Image (tube, rainbow, N blue to C red; front, side, top):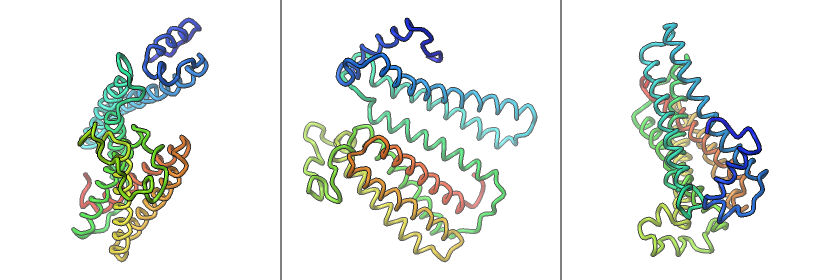
Length: 292
């Protein structure tokens, strides 16, 4: 709920409800109330900040609209952001619901985690685009080739972030912890799992990690090639920055993998991925020919 437990009785009631979940029965059996409170506050804080962001956005839109400080176009864009935020909250609950109730699942469904994460990136990217539009920077003309490559890189980065979310949802980063091979193989022999069939591409640990690696190599090579090909254009520096960010992210991904994806390294890997995404968004904005 919006209000956390405020008494010992309320905490015990919340803990009793948690003990009916598969996560408690199969993973956290015997955990103390203090341990439960720790994970509870993380989840409650995440939801609380989500609600506060929505409240601030709605109140801000209403206030600025009453003051007539917004153009119609900007007001519509902020309204779209608010609606996306509401959708994100609904998807967040849909994601969490996959791990509660009559289920043996001890984590949320990877597909739902990926959807929740990618929508968050879309909201952040759209917010960044609006912020860039509100600035005074003039954008130099870009050739069709530059625009096309910048947009393809942005699509590739989003695809890679989605692949990474599947890896995270399956804890696939804690398997096949060698590099550049996977368990000594170029292509893991368990890429296709008989029990999963085509779903191996999205639910198999070997397949999702292999796909995540291949997409990473592809984006890295493409970003380097683009930085070199467009080095003499007005956008050359931005292509070089994106290539540097992708390189740093790839190297950190390897470090994270070789260390069996501990939480601290994984969180930094995710944070770097968000920075790479924003770098790709900025590049796409720079080559766009109008405010969009």
